[in-house]
Picture 1 (cartoon, one colour):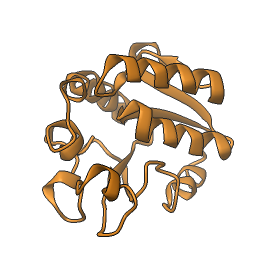
Picture 2 (cartoon, one colour; picture 1 turned 180 degrees about the vertical axis):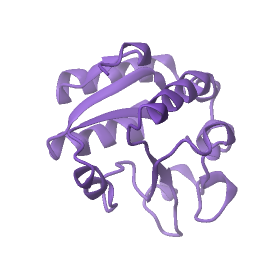
Picture 3 (cartoon, helix red, strand yellow; picture 1 turned 90 degrees about the vertical axis):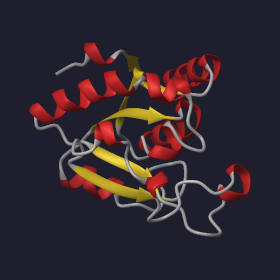
Picture 4 (tube, rainbow, N blue to C red; picture 1 turned 120 degrees about the vertical axis):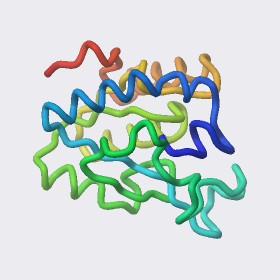
Length: 166
């Protein structure tokens, strides 16, 4: 939930629409002392996705920063250069160090970063929950297709944020 993906270059009304639900969920998770890892795109010249999407979320630019509404809600931040938040980051180590066995995925875009991160979690043996009201895609169809895919292929528990287990 960085500036470029919500209100910036690659933003959408659907991304903006999930901010209140996501903020509420993160505030509740913070109160319960649940680890909240923000994976922020932070690109460098030559990164593979720049040739497809153009320059976005460039290192040390405002577009790569978490949106103001969610500032201060992360317990840990990682910088990523690829769709999958596990790929070439310290995410797996952070989760294991904290005894995490289940990841709860939120953010944008459901069919890109969320789905690829779900794949990374699946390959590493994590249980996966995806919050349908705290994820978004530019189109409702892509959002639904990605949720269905993660549920059927990775066994993700797809639910609303008000139906969490804890």
